[in-house]
Amino acid sequence: MRSNRVLIKAGISLLVLLHLISASPYSYAQDVPLLCPLPATETETVIFRWLMNTGFELTRTKSEIVALKGKEKWSIVVKPYSPLASQVMAVYTVNDRPDPEKIRQLHSFIDSLKENTGEDIPGAILMLKEYTVCIRAGANGEQIQFTGFIVGKEGLIVSIAHDLDTVREVAVILGNGEEIKGRVIRMDFDRDLSLIDINREISSPVSLSRARNLLEPGETVYSIGCSGNNHSSLHTGMIKGPPGLVNNIPLWQVDMETPHGTSGGPVFDTHGNLAGIVKGRYRGTNSRGFIITVETLIEFLKEQ
View 1 (cartoon, rainbow, N blue to C red):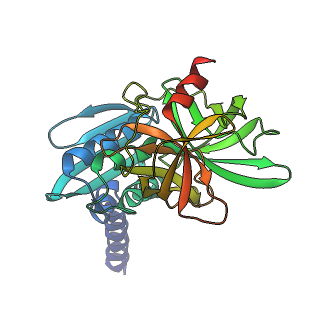
View 2: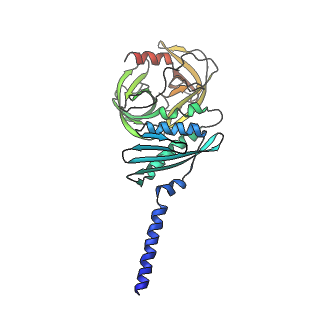
View 3: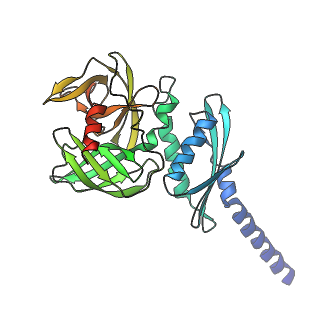
């Protein structure tokens, strides 16, 4: 009888041990390989910046990226899957315990890169999605959503100003899914531009030094905007012609899908240079939009 109890206890102990092994963060990571629609080197760079922008200290070896912040730790391995895609294996722990929610956030980030990806979307554009943010606010008793992008390492975000006349605080959803508070510190309703402070150091915002003010009619451009569910999407368009004046403010006209919520999003050329900001769409259509020029943005920022 006693021998049977010993065998039962031994069996229970073995089951517990097997459960602990199967629940370890490494076995979890092996069960969730992620496919990313970028070559391995570009995927590493995107993930490296994604982690750095959330305050992690990073080291990179030939085999993995290790990110540390307090008791949090990421261990990420990126391997080539094909010439144009890569496979990501990730382990996240806090206090040496796995957190499935963080892995889910990484899934969401990788999935956002998969959307609208194809041979017509340059990798340089995909890498800029992490600097685009979704913004929510309450205005005149209603919830509004729009888009912005990071322009200052100290946490400054540029967006549009229309509908913000009574708004001072907003919710900002970063590229990694984190939601933080933002404060509207400046609005220019003539230029339709606003400046939002999130009081967060950002390592590599959108570069203004390489921004383009002169575009060619027929040139292909790409916008990034939040059209719903706090999730950014990519849209391809074409410049229609020289900018026209609207209330003495120059605006590019573009043939491009401009869904509700994408106003304030950045517009880039094929090399990833900033080319303007989505102002909105032509009334009555969803496929013709207006873009605020880089010159207008620079003037706005200089007047801080």
